[in-house]
Image 1: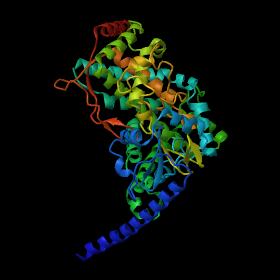
Image 2: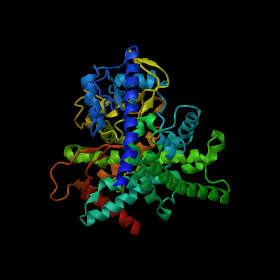
Image 3: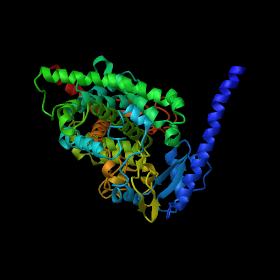
Length: 530
């Protein structure tokens, strides 16, 4: 009993001190906000927790509803989540102000002990604070890794991976077996990234499976509740407790990442020395390129590892989610599936086993389906937070330095003033003559920012787009699709929020080989046999 009392007191005293500290800090923040010239509109909040109680399990939906009610129509709203002021951006006009007009002020990231622990002092691209290091790394990846020429150089690799997936699904179709689309697309996207990053031997020793496991660990940690994001001043107070939880997990994950990445980098260095310099950049993988320009850009080995972790995490989840959700929406709208299949099959030579990348140029409806999927279901509905580096006036409101900025890409792409039938899946809006035919997601049209815009736009969007288009084209070209026996008519589109948003239930579909494609494949098989 005495032991219980001691433990109780050990936790009670810090808790009382914690509440006093939070109450004091909350009061200081409220006073600071009142002293601002003209703060953005804000709903009534509570002491200590601020507006945290107003944000539900799907924050992008809660924030959109709050902005509609309290944002006064300007797309800017101030929330205090714990002790941290957050500027919520929910309209195209407000997004343009933040990511173009005042981009130089809002281009940084909030500090994060988690990203520091996991990403070698936040020395990656996504979480690095704005500064010289970030500019150098950004220049490196845009100049050497994600150029149009470099993305095209992986064309045959993408087709190889697509061919493997189609063969696997063909076996399942022959056995009348259902396909876990969620799992298969995640594996495919991960294999594409692994091959581009580390070369064609990425499956050796089960490395591709280990990468998937580590990517999932990162996603859970970054997407979960982190007390530091709401009460950063408590880092010193709760250092012992946090080390028992998040820090320990982050350090353990970083150790596993480090061992794997170190092994792969060392293998590349050994291979380079053995072959006297290796292949040209157009044919080399990302690690070859990073090692080749390491001295030029002044980056360390740890910096390279941090950048590689970004590549694996961002490249896998985003592409697989777009593919999964595109298939889900097409299954819910059979007439659109039929329309897409007709286009893809018409523009692919009849005796061709799979759709190849040169066939994609004439598939406008395919691109429209991808765009509409990104609009209705952006994989990261809340972009990685920005941070104001100086006081700034935005649309007449004063935004103090140090304000965390949350851009609700999901709300922006459903803005009723910008989009025709914003809640419906309607790819026709993106084809010639459609209401959004001229709108793209590459950072110039602020009603459509699934990858961000300005200095912090995702540098790998063209790489991801190439992965999505070739796989989606082949899924609808090679197979007809149905729902498993006994499954309800409609597909459950319930979401689960995290660093990215996933469907609550896995997408399970039954493939069937259509006669036209089946005949083409048989002809190809006969040619190969002959």
